[in-house]
Amino acid sequence: MIGTRHPREEDLARLAGGDDGRVRSFLLGRHVRSCVECQDRVAEYQDLRQNLSEGDLPGVNWSFLAPEMRANIRLGLEAGACVRTTRVSTPWSLARSWAAALGPRAAVGFATLAVLVVSGFYVRDVRNRAVAIHAADSTPVLQNTSSGVVLRDGDASMMMLNSADAISQTVSARGEIGARVIDAGTVTITSGYLE
Amino acid sequence: MAGLTFGALLYAQETPLDTASSVKIDLPADAPLSLISTTMGDSRATSRGGAIVLDLHMGLTLRNSGFKHIRGVTLLITAQEFAPGGKGSVARPSIDVPPGENFTLPIDIRLVRPVRESSGPLVRVQLDGLLFDDLSFFGPNKLSSQRALTFWEVEAQRDRAYFKQALQARGESGLKQEMLASIAKQADRQQLDVSLTRNGRSTGAAVPATDHVAQFAFLNLPGAPVQPLEGWAAISGNEARSPRIEVVNNSGKPVRYVEIGWLVKDKQGREYLAGSVPGSETTMVLPSGQRAKLQQDTALKFSRGGRPIEIDGMTAYVSQVEFADGHVWVPSRHDLDSSPLLRITAPSPEEQRLADIYAKQGLAALVAELKRY
Image (cartoon, rainbow over all chains, first blue to last red; front, side, top):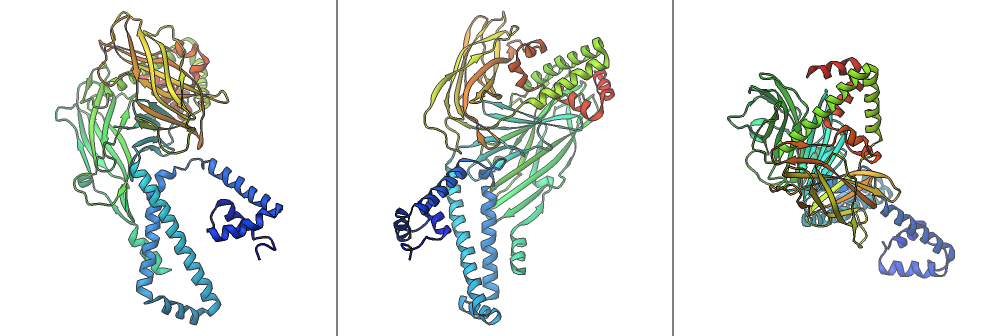
């Protein structure tokens, strides 16, 4: 089927990102190699991915948010566990009750959605664990952010928060960053230090 | 859905913090500064999954219990359990607190760490230094607060004298012009986002693997007692590492501290104040006519709005000198106006404070402030 008509857009996008398994990639690749139109689409997706990976989102410190993201993912998983243990005894009884209440089509739809959500959490948790391992291995980093000066050391961090928008900053190669804030006619300078 | 929400509420518990168990405030017994009260505002500890987030919003009310006017204060903040070796500070320069008067200092900190058992206070607050109106100092000075507070005070005296002179010579309209020029200069300054690591490459975004050693260009200020001779840093894309600058003491007095202002230029020719390269933390005494090398083994990575700033050139100038007798030198207003490049340097905290008074309270309030001392 793949060799005789164009694959779906999402299949081409996944192929461009190398997100498919070997068999699927082989089958899609066989069509794309013989189809100029699909080759162009795959090239466009590859360019798009390249552009997205090159540009950082402004004003967002992903490394700093990592612990919070991990915490929220765990929250979702544990909350899901609460629901499973208290309301249903087995997956089959859940499926039967859904099928009875919603009809077989809706039940299949919900079951698919549930699989997707759980997979999403699993994939993101794996990625965040990788970030945690990387962070734990890294050396302490001191940086200025819009909220203040933050010292990150593995999974822990200490941020000297600005009480208002910083009007200027000072950076010393000795290992010190300071942020100046003016509030009620007085200047406060908060600083972080690399030991 | 109700179960999910209930689970979420249980999981993201928030508890208010009390001062006694979470914060330890240490003021030396002989300090001319007394702690009057501490407020914790809406300080909270939030447990979220595998992490604990502490938001501390404290206000310390302190009293000048000595006999001199306080011109500046620095508090050392440590949270050893959260970021091992991590420390911060809160400084308040450009103040004039007479004996017996109170003032309040805010301390706002966010701490994040994996959940684990712990005992003892979460944060320790210590006095690091007090500077008085005669430039005498009190405190353990672990953060070299004496030097920082003294430089801020000398800059403040220079700038107050400059604006007072403008008022005296050209009247209120002259002072207004100076303030408008200062505000415009501050608005023109472009600031960089900087991440700093010790001993080698900073982590995060990819940088080209090819390092090259770039030399500093120097801007010599006519009145500077110390002159830079040569210097370089390893450059790799938006990262500069291990800056080294050789200086010579051209004054007739021994010098114990030098700091170099560091400007970088991007590929588009825009200039930014990157930071400073100070002398060694250990006591350095540079006799008259002698040379010394300032070097720091840190890596600085520059970006702006999330985009790396590719370094195309570097300029340096002498920004602070401390003599062995404790006197300090800072560039004069004339020095700072001598090069368009120095427009991008940060104004003193006092100039920023005076400009803020003018912008928010008007010219009359500024004139009254300049007449205070």
